Image (cartoon, rainbow, N blue to C red; front, side, top):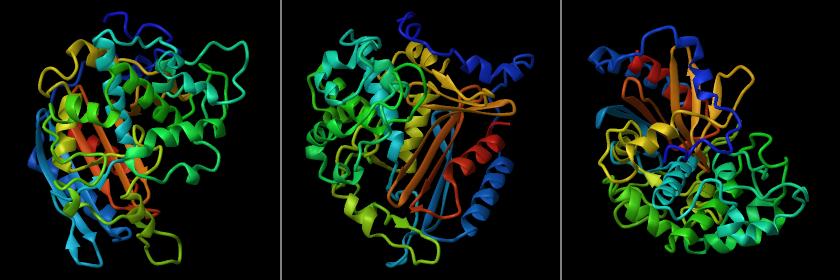
Length: 383
């Protein structure tokens, strides 16, 4: 496993993200005090008041516990149902982190290698036209780190982004001929949803188990995430928030988000999960190294969060294997955000202080930015 992350590395730049703080001693875990919680509460309330549309749920994680959570506004404004601790939100692209965990589990089991060409497990990837003829096949690592060169979406994405979870793989197959290579593989960062969907099929075939069943049985259940699912199950259906889309000068509409409850087409390994603040707190605790044993080896997690594969020119942010790293002064926040019709989310953490922040929002197009709010809150919590 020591060599697991050392090949195909473009930029070993997470160290550079921390470079300005290396002369200072490592920051010890700081207790999440009532004063810090009050600061986050005040911040979140002010952010929500900026447009007061829909609802907002915020959580603070310390080690293995969700130490505070509060909700603001409505999960369903039409029916005057307030957002609450048990409100279920779509978490969008945070789903990619679960797909990446599946990949790393299969690496630990010896079923795949990060350097495997994705076509070894998913030859249909070659339906994507116009790859440079002399370019080597794209690897699992390149897809997972957004350096495969694949375009963000297939052309006419709406045609491929509707349909039930049960048919998502066929949606991927029909989308690939309408996808292109925007860059030569391995040369640039480019966020690709269709790439991650393809990764999900490759991993499913390597595991010899359907993707959604694998994630549920080998990741969600071991972590105790009983209210996280790829579609509205009986356990969560009644608590799913109504998702609102806001456009300037128009009343919030919820029909698009409501339609997507029946499925998002090919967007399953890259963005289909629903979850709650309690469940995502369990996920952050796992990412902090405080979760139950057996999901990933500690060595694997430590290596995972030690490096990124692309970074901006100022080394203020970068992307690793399905995570963003963002530097704010002495803090390097790690995590991911999510965006689907009617829902925004952010889950970030600081491994040095063993703290994290979760932000859920059932509104898109409003003034509140969950990632900005999460970063500001984590700066309070981790100081």
